[in-house]
Image: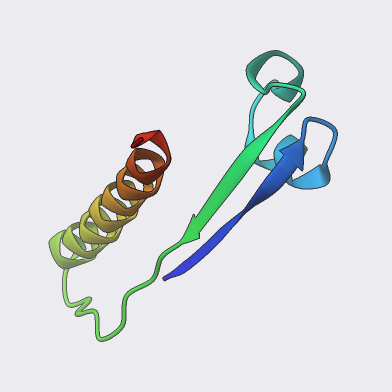
Length: 75
């Protein structure tokens, strides 16, 4: 897993590529969090195994995102 964190502005290429309607959905500046997740040794013998693997990666990414956001909200 790779986590990138840093300041961003609404006119940056990453913002325009990542968010739909950044001119409406993104403030002028803020903190960007980019989480890239992957898995190794995935069994792909069936469609259901592929779906379970993708779901597990998604769940891990969402949990990581939540932890990062929560850590900034704590006083």
